[in-house]
Picture 1 (cartoon, helix red, strand yellow):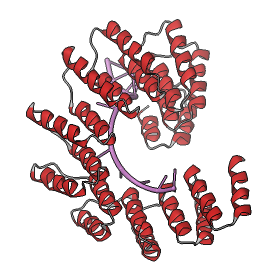
Picture 2 (cartoon, protein in one colour):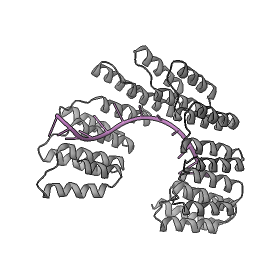
Picture 3 (cartoon, rainbow, N blue to C red):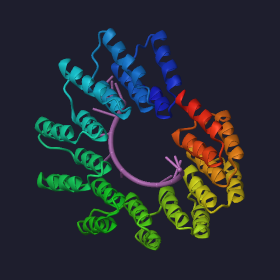
Picture 4 (cartoon, rainbow, N blue to C red):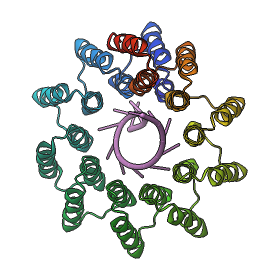
Amino acid sequence: NSVIHGLCRSYRIPDALDLLKEMSFRGCPPAVVTYNIIIDGLCKTGAVDEAYQFLLEIISKDCNPTVVSYTCLIDGFFKAGRVDDAKKLFEEMVKHGCAPNMFTFNALIGGLLKAGKVEEAHKVMEDAGKNDGSLHAMTYNICIDGLCKLSKVDEACKVLEKMECAGCIPTVVTYNTLIDGLCKAKRVDEAKQIFQQMSNIGCHPDVITYTSLIDGLNKSSRVNEARELVDEMRSLGCHPNVVTYSTLIDGLSKASRISEAQQLAEEMDHRGCLPNVVTYSILLDGLCKGSRIDEAFNLMQEMNRRGCIPDVVTYNTLVDGLCKANKVNEALQLLKEMLEKGCNPNAVTYTTLIRGLSKAGRLEEAQQLMGEVSRL
RNA sequence: ACUCAGCUAAGCU
């Protein structure tokens, strides 16, 4: 089980499945827990239907799926956007006499909110409360995050109040979630108030708190304040990580402060915090948008030299840069390269290319590409 | 008995 678990965690599902088969051959039949590990691994890689087959396999062996089996699958269906399948499975589990637990309720609340079903999510909150007496901070956090991501920040704030009234102590995640929600709603000053509030009551802001605020300040065109915040966090012994640096680099870059962004990238490197694919993509985007395509390609080479693999966003960034520089042919060439390297283009790739072709007056090719996309 | 599942931050059109 441990090995299968490890394989699943490194997304090596095929290897995990091989090992599962080997177990039976070697006279050590998998237990329900083994199947649960596999089900979870499959769900996390988006293979919900395959995961569901294993639920059926458990049943066909006259074993009983546990609450873990069902909850992983419910979560998987929600994450795949299959709300009805998730709900159906929940009903099925109850019908089979398997009682939901807090994990199950959390999956339901998060999933329903992600699907925009606020009322239903609130009902599940109530049910969960009745079921276990009191709710975990994590359950409230999931609810707050879901509401924030639906741009219902005020409702999210009300949930925080409810949580406090119910005697549940908010955690650093609770505050971080709300701060991020407020920042994304361009309400940075209110986010800063929460930041003060949490500090005052002894809940220490962490690197995520700071990073959320930095991003909020960036996106409200307050990059200087964002920079200061990095100094502040350092002085308080909270170390910026690759996400923090990348966030600030993005802010600088989008404010056309490319050289400062580049300096910061070097600084993080010197401090032993390695730039990742996101950091590079941000820098590339800055160069492209500043019409410095050649420098962008040099950086791309450096990125490769340092063993950082470009992903679909990296390619899209360059494709866009090339299109805007009237180099649509080279952009198309990059599309080929992506396909060759096994990096799947997405909707942004095609949108960018189709727009680029159209703007260049190459309408036939644009239409042809549209045709290819709709056949995908 | 042991082994499995749940919350927050950055990039492209």
